[in-house]
Image (cartoon, rainbow, N blue to C red):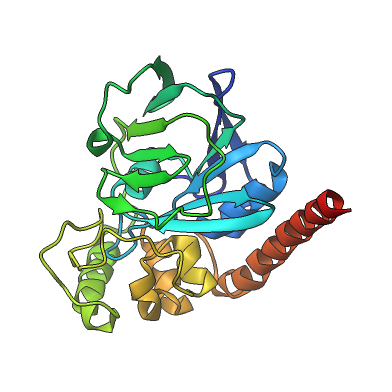
Length: 289
């Protein structure tokens, strides 16, 4: 678990090279869309796609989504999908993945602890339902079931197919297990606050609901910034938009964010988003001039 910094995996699809980088400045953005926005702004001319998780992914119920950010026709595109990718990233200590450049080949990226293997395949050996994340021009899903929403008209800037699997040998270092267990059970009891009904469908990792929307992306849901930095399911916004709840969850697993800091997160993240849109608007103006 990274409590004082964010660990980002950069993968160059063209050269098949990778690098882990430590970003202390990204801690201020908490996770999810906050970290994703800043990474996109800093790599806006090179990044094909950015995937982020949240600091609570895999630890608490209903915090089960990953954030996928990219640009299409000088427009910022935000997609949110469930499955296992966010929890696996967090457990492996990876706060974000930045895909740089492009490749016409099908690539399988396998991450185990500090090692990354990038294999070229004429036809991917692993089927989509064996991938933690599958990306191509018109596809974004986890385990072939948990989608990131429709990409029609908002295609990813990818030439080939990118498959990602993540695993780790690390175990969870629980700082305050009693507080964590108590909070976990309290949140389970708060399931009636969700704006979706329980069902018998496959559940996103970290969610017991199995709702009839589990296979769908959430790009069309207007959710507050704080839950999207975690990244909570959009249907649990009423639980995770409250700072005391978020503060208690973060503290129970060892993070040292304070109330006053969490109050500043929405304005900080909103400013970065405005900067991204400003850059994209300039690009659009240049194209049309």
